[in-house]
Length: 316
Image (tube, rainbow, N blue to C red; front, side, top):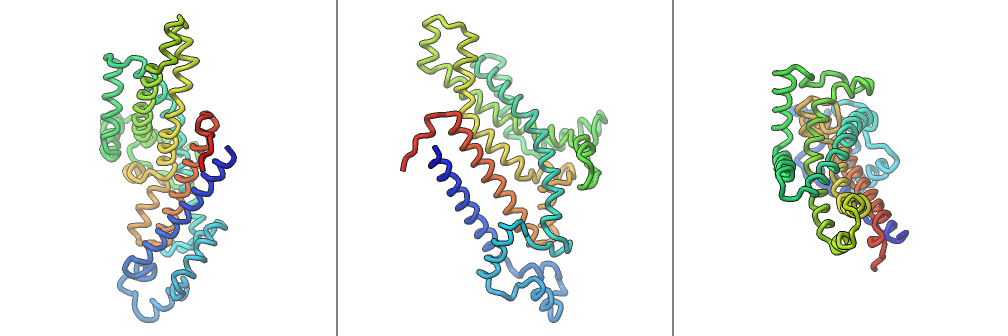
């Protein structure tokens, strides 16, 4: 098992290094550079020369990539061109806000999805199953900006139960942030629940139709014991990967939801950075989002191996 974990870790490191190279290369292939994007029409003559010298853009691309990669390993992501502040300082608060929003959605969405998925699986081809599965499919196919708009119209404009737009600053206390996260968290919970519910339902049905569950029924084992001792533990194992992928998607920054609700998170900052053509900031946020995604997937693989002995067999 230790060799498998080391193998997964090395694979994650290689993937992250590859993504860093792709992100840097994509920025290099873009017309102009950070200075031309920042100066706009004034990107000529002495101003352009001064900006390129200040940012070190005259150096070869491989040298700049090496410095940027080493700085990222040390926690130094550079300086924002438009804002003139260290990117680490700018990202810190936004990342905290995204984690708060995602944690609320995960706290409510994951248990709810598992519960509804188990209920749907145990009631296969019944009215309750059709209702839950149909609702999940509808929620999965509904774009986030559409569901966000519906929630704002219903719960904010019509009923006045919650604010449709987040107006607090990105350095607001966590309690104020939680109070303003009701509708954004509800939108994320809807999407999260739908994806996990479908996976849990399919897994429960597969376990119920397995040979050892059939044998337990023939031996007269009580139905409740079959569900608690055999169906639930074995059906939740395949769902771990889906839960991990969904959590990684949430923690990576939900661009659409944060943009619609004006939530001061990492996803909203990506949109602002792209609009401002702040290339170093876009580059840093992209790398951070990919790192979070890879890290969560790595932890998910390790958890799956700990819970499922069949995955611990090493194959060269």
